[in-house]
Structures are given as C-alpha cells and as structure tokens.
Length: 307
Image (cartoon, rainbow, N blue to C red; front, side, top):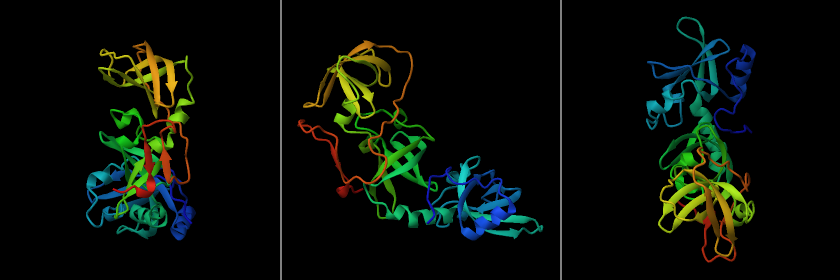
C-alpha cells in the first residue's frame, strides 16, 4: 500500500525521465514537484523533466470541484513542493506533450486509505503549515490540513502558537477529535511528558534558562520546559516572552509546584524551547499529567474526545 506522508516528503518528479513519467502514470505513485505558476486559466503549471505539466483547478485540492476550495489556497502553492498523481501524458492543441496532474486524487486516496482509519489518540507525524492567533494548522498527509489549537500546544500557557512551533517544523501530534466530515483537531501536549517526567529533568539548586509566561500580583510564572512552569517572585517590569535565568529553590511533586528565584532579569535574547517528546508513535487512550499525590488533576481521555 502507498505510504502517505506530509507534503514535501514525496519523491521529487521535477527531473524525471520520460521512462520514469510513464512508470509513475502506470503505478499511480504519489510524487511531488514545484508549482511554477497559477495561470489565468486557474490551473497550476509544473515542469516535469522538460515536459509541460498542468493541474486544472478542480484537481488542485479535494473539494475544489465542489467549490469548497478558494483560489488563495491554490495560488499559495506556487513556488512550493506540491504532491500529485500523474494522470496521463497527452498532446496539447499544438501537438506538444502535456502531462495532466491531480493533487485531488492524491488527497482522496490519503483520506480513504490512511486518515479515515485513524481515531482519537493515534499519534502521527505532521508539518506546521501556518500559524494563527488561535492555533497552528498542520499538514497531516498530502497537504490535508488539521488544526492544532493553542490550548493543545502545552500544559503551560503561551501567548501565541509561535511561542511553541514554527512554520515548516516537523512535529508529532495526537488526534484529539474528529468530526463527521473527517476533519481532525490535533493536540501535542500529551506527547511532551507528564509533570513528573518534566520535573525529573531538573534538580533543586540548579540555575536554568526560563521564559516568562505571565506576571501576576502574587508572582511570575516562568516556563522551564514546554510542559512545565514554576512560580517566582512578582516582577512587574518583566513581560511575557522575556528570557530570564532562574534558580530552582524547590520542587514539590505533591503540589505540582516548582519554586523559582529570578537571577538575571534580562538575558537579552529570545528563545523557544525544543520539544522533548515522551511519546512519538502508537496510540494513547488515557493520559494523566498530574502526580499521584496532587489534588490538582489534569488528564485527557481520548475515548471521550468529541468536537
């Protein structure tokens, strides 16, 4: 069976020989190439080994034929790797060879043979395609998009999805839920470790880098890893996103608290922590972030994950 991957991960067909083109047509292999133009006939144009190739608008994305895909979603493919199936090699009205391509077919097959078999709790590879204030959109296969909401990016609160991920970044996500139309909502926080797993990476007495997440009257919340934040003294002169160094005064599993003391309030640089995954494959039925001793309970039950 065809392995379905994110767009940009397929075999590049830009320099295929004629024999390779014919083989790809016969096998139905999903390949990719760089879209060179979106022309006045509303079609994407490619060059495949010197052969002019076109992708009519209705073949540019699943749903285009039904009118659910806007031009902007297609024209932004120009200059970017775009996956497709080669449908046929023919002659244009001037007698020149022309290759007809379909991204729609690649996406339909990806849905039917891969995405439709997935359920909430399944862990899959994704690529971040663009970021909005409310979340990041990710390619889950053949350019098919799914939303990763901002509150699913980590247990620690962040101001923007850009605080955690960037466009083009390869990440792992779990499927949080799926609607009747098959559209996914994703989550990543369950893959980044429990409180105990994150706290085990630190020791009392260490001084580490932290990122200010919020400043309150009673203290300053400072993130020291993507799924772990501690509380330091209140510093009104600090602002969210600022990088500081902090001394770890205490780690309290029973209260799920990390007590911090700010050492340097102005490191003069912006950082974003790398994602440290505890899970990168398989399936999750139930995930508990909290420690057994804590009265505060944070968990996800994927069996009851509904939109």
